[in-house]
Image: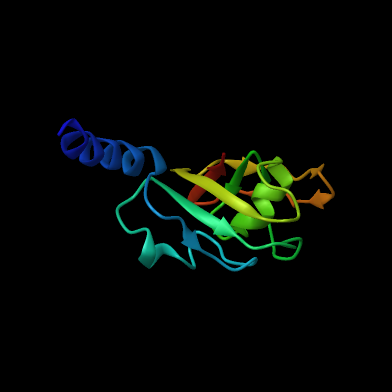
Length: 120
């Protein structure tokens, strides 16, 4: 009899722990490109495919919203070449973005830009 009320509770807890399903993105997709799927959210998750070394990217740790999300995640060390889930947090624009080389990914510098994101 106890099983009947334990299972629904465990299901709710399991769903809450998993969070919402990540958005499947392509290697070159930027926050700007997928904005219709993330409207009104300051944080969301994406699922990057394998091999996302292509795409343009500006910044280090904080990236312009026209940068490739998956390439930024590779640069930041959040994912490896086999892809995976990435949490994205939207941030205000920065006065400047410094380029760098990390994890085999080179980013470019850029002056002020209106909106930013970081990956975790």
